[in-house]
Image 1: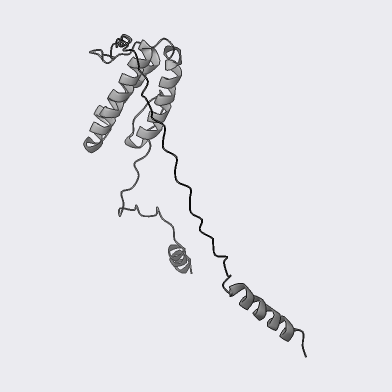
Image 2 (image 1 turned 180 degrees about the vertical axis):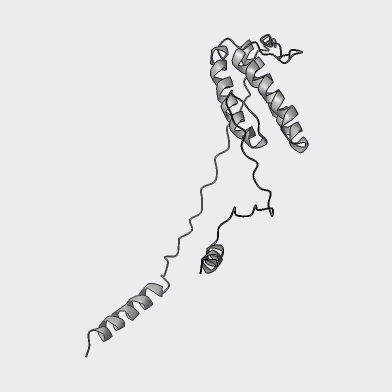
Length: 180
């Protein structure tokens, strides 16, 4: 008799024993004692306090865009000037509205920051970071953000692959046959 037969038998018995429903003890129901009457609750009397609303703090004047779109921060003004030139000269007409709205929102944010003395010192860094981000974003349009920038070469349009631009193993095989 092999050892696997008793193990199988024990496992089977164990499975049957675990699967058998457990007999639960029946709970005894005892009658609950009658509830005591609730004590009478008298609402507290509150003295009327005259309602006074605190005066709202004087609202800061919303940033008003200057007619020429200048913020007064050299880095921000240079950013706005170059971005406007990029939008007007290089950005395709279908994308101009989105870029113009982004520029206007950015300038409004910077004008609000300039009005806040706590945020004003950080404006130079913010404008420099925005310039680098816009430079990377608009490079595909050929925009120039710094002296010496070269516009990105035009990428081929989908389906218009330039000859010799894509090298495949098949093309190499044909070249090898031509050398024979």
